[in-house]
Each structure stands twice: as C-alpha cells, then as structure tokens.
Image (cartoon, rainbow, N blue to C red):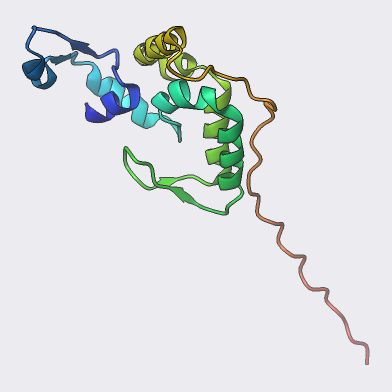
Length: 164
C-alpha cells in the first residue's frame, strides 16, 4: 500500500474519507479497495519504469536536462538497477534503462499507468493553473536515448600454416 501511495500519490484503489479530525484522518482516513493487491501486482509486473510521480510532475518541466542525465547514465556498462522501491536488484542494462527513460519522457502517464495516474494529473493541472511549478516543455530532440553497446568481440587470431 505504501509503495502504491508513494509512487502514484493517490492510486485509484484508495479513497480518503475526511471526518473533520485531521490527525485521526491521517492515520485512519484511507480506505483501500480490495483490488489494491491486483494494482500492486500489475505495477510490479511492469518492466523497468520511471515512477509515475516523476514522469507526470517532475520530468515534463526539465525534459532536456533529464535526457542529458539519462544519456550519461545509459553510457555506462551495467547489468543491474537498484530502485528506491520494489524488489531489487532488477536485471537491466543500459538498453532497458534508456527504454524506461524514453517512455517517461515521450509518453503520457495514463497510457503507461492507467487510471492510477489521475490524481497526479489533477495535481499537475492545478500547479499549471496556479503557476506554482514551471511550465512543461517539449523535448528539443525527441530521438531515442543513446545507450552503451559493448564493442564487438575481436576477430579470432589468424591461423598461419607453416610449410616445411
């Protein structure tokens, strides 16, 4: 439940019921639909992904900077990613990392995460209306993120036959 809440802010499987007592409500005001387990399993079944809160609220405001950072990381030769949430390590290299970052920079959160993303989209719209966050900006170069590719193996040594 905590991971769903942390990554999605207010997933579709939870409802906040305000009773008027804020201290009590912060502890007991969250009513979870029994389908939260399925929602969590679906989230965990996704390949490497960028947390929705970053994809919807943070990355759109600094797409070019995020892409430059991602290309720097994707230039490394690695075999595992250790996320801040969920099971770790995840078997993923530069190609998978670049694909996850490309998806976060080039697709909307709803197409990746479905209705769980709605509360983040409401927050994002409200922040634009209030001008409390920078305006989202498009990528200046939407080409895929470049990633490390190991060099091809050296050719086998030439066989030299000796004639006597």
